[in-house]
Length: 240
Image (cartoon, rainbow, N blue to C red; front, top):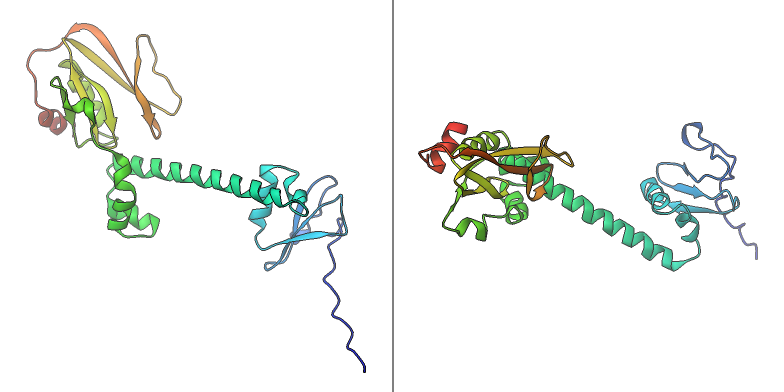
């Protein structure tokens, strides 16, 4: 009985064959080549074999984790666990960055509706997903000599703190839409820096540990606090 010839296996791409757009893997490098449906990760040390990937990004990610990882994926199951651990760590970092970005957007006055639109979801879903992580004034706001300045935004908070500082109030805590201020007999100066920046001059003390892009600082001045004490609402109204 005649048997049909077997369908030939797909040949592995040689190391010196050009990839998409004429790319050719350099000696000692790993290169992704193939079509839109099959991408082949070629190892120059084993030119007769190729590992198929459905997504070239995964191959690039593996190389970024460890240059030896793509080769080890061909023979070591533990390498796949290493890939999972690295991908999970990157996902956690992306989640933290997204939390900070949403908090910063709220601090800048963006509505939940606009945030939801960017995220491809509803206002309610965005608020439910991120609202609880924004926080509210904690124990510091419950002390007798403290007040909460809110609502504040990125664009109004420093003027509000400057006005409060002249009357002896200085920030001791903050969140995306508020500052908790405590009273003193002297005037205070406040400063805000981005990322790892520091204010110029001496005697600055950092308030908290920073929030997203911003770090906050305060220092006590020699001048006594101004008489009179505008309410928190008045300070926010003037600052706005």
